[in-house]
Length: 135
Figure 1 (cartoon, rainbow, N blue to C red):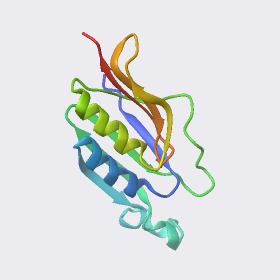
Figure 2 (figure 1 turned 180 degrees about the vertical axis):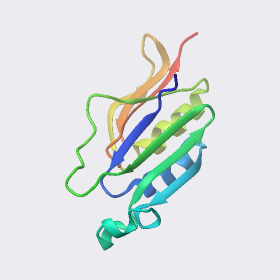
Figure 3 (figure 1 turned 90 degrees about the vertical axis):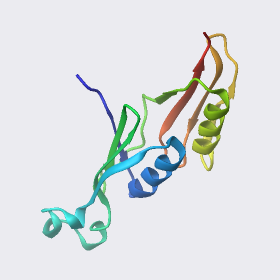
Figure 4 (figure 1 turned 30 degrees about the horizontal axis):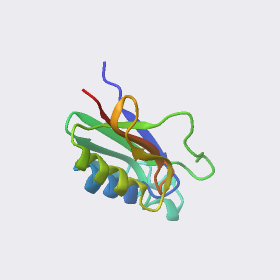
C-alpha cells in the first residue's frame, strides 16, 4: 500500500507546487487546470485556470494537490508533513525556504531526539516539520 499526501489550496495550488518543486528538489509530473479537463463547460470562467490535479515527485515521495472548489476550502489542521533529512545544512535550507512568508511554530534547533527539528506553517497554510534525527 502506498500512502500519499493530497493537499487542498485556496486558489494557489500551482504557485505552491512550483515553490515546493524548487525547495524540495522535486519534479511536477502532472498538472491539469479545470479548463483543460472534460469538465471545462461545468466550471465558471474564473476557475478555468485553477488546478484540478497536480502531482509532484521527489525521490520516493509523491505530493498531490488541487485548488478547492469555491466555498469548499478549509485551512489544514490536525496534521503536518514531516520531511526527514540526514544533512543539517540541507534541512536548514529547506526549513528556511518553507518558512519564508509563513509562520515558524517551533524554531529549527536541537532537541532530545534530533540534531535539528523545527515546525512551521508555510505561506500556503500547509503545516510542515523538518527533522534530522540523531543516530
